[in-house]
Image 1 (cartoon, rainbow, N blue to C red):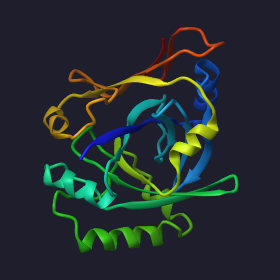
Image 2 (cartoon, one colour; image 1 turned 90 degrees about the vertical axis):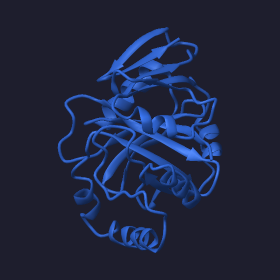
Image 3 (tube, rainbow, N blue to C red; image 1 turned 60 degrees about the horizontal axis):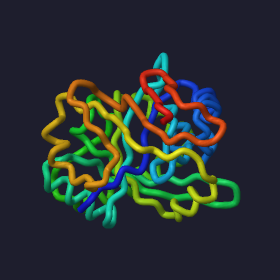
Length: 246
């Protein structure tokens, strides 16, 4: 199995303001405007093959944006990826489903949270046991209950300090990125893995991954982008995360 970096997750107390600043300072095209989903608000910018997601989650917003986590895709179905990770001793949650309307399209996806990679992960049950009936039941129950009024907000009231997910898209994500238009591309992402080095050594990353692991820090700290016309080279600090346009 190989995991490919799909998106960077930045937690922000005001997704709209963070989105406006990033677009103005980097030229990143908007893939999805701020949208409520499963008790959270998510906005996504397209940066080549790696998106930048701005996520508003939790009852107590951070005082400034933080490098909250990462999203991956796998080269196999989600259940097989989940089984492979658990076999490596890396815990995952059961799959969770989500969907949003974007224009006239309904975009659906499934994801599992991955534990043991960053500090204080988003609080939800995770296991290293071989996937089975319990995971299937949890996915069905979760999909049913999240639609109840107020349940999503209650379930995401505690955000923890990080989130790492493996996502399986139920729509053509590559086509959506092309439709968003051309803009800067992510060339590298620096993530602090202090205290979790062993799990990262076991993680089956694609050899061409733009991730740069920093064993002296925690969380996403830096995102390097190519420069586009009209955008000066330099650094933009969005809370705890430095965006470097080169």
